[in-house]
Length: 137
Image (cartoon, rainbow, N blue to C red):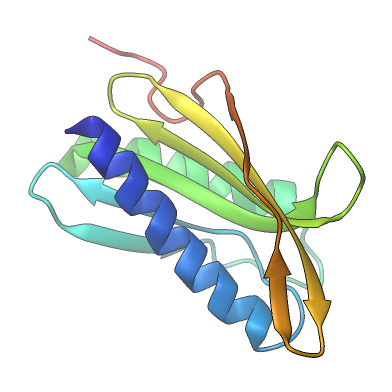
């Protein structure tokens, strides 16, 4: 079941990020999660994008997820930002997604803007250390 929540969270984040880059330009990092009730949540950090770095938003999102997990219980959570692929420095959507059991993955999806729209390369998926669910029972 947790695998399904990871996939649902990724798909939600991907769709919203795709919409943002189709609209032209970059976007501030944002996140999504699934509460134990099954409720899908969307979250962002209210920082001015002109004077804040993506790392500020990411730190705020992680802190917010931890608080939401304490107060409401989360089964999965993740975030996305517009960044660069490590392999070739291509523009990429960068995801960090975790399940409540401590499983965490990084998904990098390189993309290019073309006259016909946004072209995505194959996702690069790697297991990473959890940052949201750091205390697994």
